[in-house]
Length: 254
Image 1: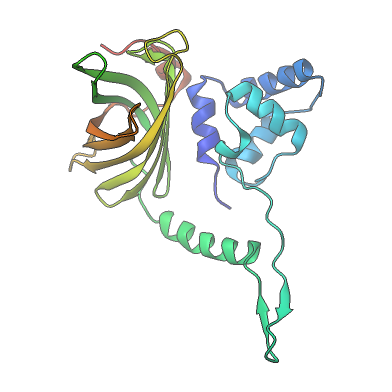
Image 2: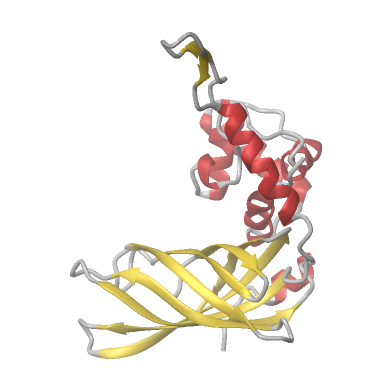
């Protein structure tokens, strides 16, 4: 059983308890004309990995509450069962399917669970980028909450915790000893300079021996179909992910 840390990180980023999240899902169901019976227990089952695929009525409510497609919330999508067929030479082959995928994933997860969990907490994310249209270098800052399970880190910026208003940031990272590698996505404000453009790319960071800072570089695309890069760092500011802590850092970084 593998916990759904993506969903947990998103919920924490929204500053909602499991009970509050369930209430929000029920409200969303009413608004969509599809009443549901979401409960704290159901949210716990999703986050613990006991339930891996939400039914359609819940999937649509999840998308409404989080603003993300259900595929980006850490759930497993249904995969057809593998089938055996004759190989034409007297033997049999098995089509690639769920069993093979599950087996491989299980091996990775058992290894990942051996990694010590030390990165969960609130971090200050800071990166720099060059704006060709403005001819200058700028920086973006966010307070993000990181949740770790095994060697996977998922990060979600806190509401209102961006140097650029209404510019949420998400990170999906993997830890390999002192190397952190993964992807980033930032949705710019619709009324901002970049007119709601969605940017994404890759990220690789090195973890300092203290475990309180990661520094490295991002890679992403530009508006002129070019590939850009720049520095990125994460600094630990609080190991707590309590509701009071998240509220304290739901503000513009200094």
